Image 1 (tube, helix red, strand yellow):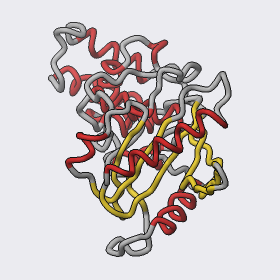
Image 2 (cartoon, helix red, strand yellow):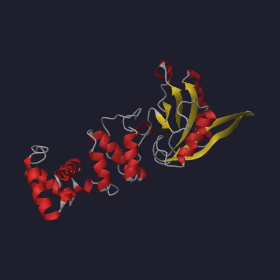
Image 3 (cartoon, rainbow, N blue to C red):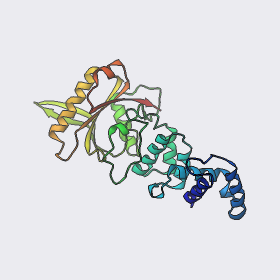
Length: 273
């Protein structure tokens, strides 16, 4: 109904290419609608319905997971790519309106680190194979702590991230399943520990995460690539995509650009909130 009212408004205003936002026609219709059907058809609501139609001019394109309360939150945004990003998040993560509002408030779209934010398309939830870590990772990643002024050690960072995962922690992205933390691997009688090991069901790949409570150092890249190669050779199955490495540091520096050229290695920062 709301979509159809939006369509009729746009058509009455001259179509998609000629319609004027907020002209007198909306006010005229609002007066008539409120008289016959109640206050829910005020000018603001009709403008939302018009925006809704302009966002989805083909009804079949409207995701079934999106409610009108979701739409109201999304219509407050100005950028079409930003709208598409949050619609995708609702579909992928089954977000409630409150969770969507919280994600928007945290400026998740603005914090996307690698993605081409000028070319975000609506996904097909039945085929999310086009997703990459580039579409997910944020910079900085926001980590809730008891005291945001404290300097956390790496073990404390492990703890906070694991605790947040239990509460739909989406700062890392979508589809992460925790395999383990401080995962032991033994090579030639030498024991090493992977900070956090995930499997991402949307990426169909293992994701090795290393945490550093200091700024990035070039040797961190080598350590992470070592763990990624190990998982690739010893844990990855034939039907899995190549293992991905993610390094989370307190601060970036010039070495990030100079030394991180491996397309399967990503570097981002964290911020305590």
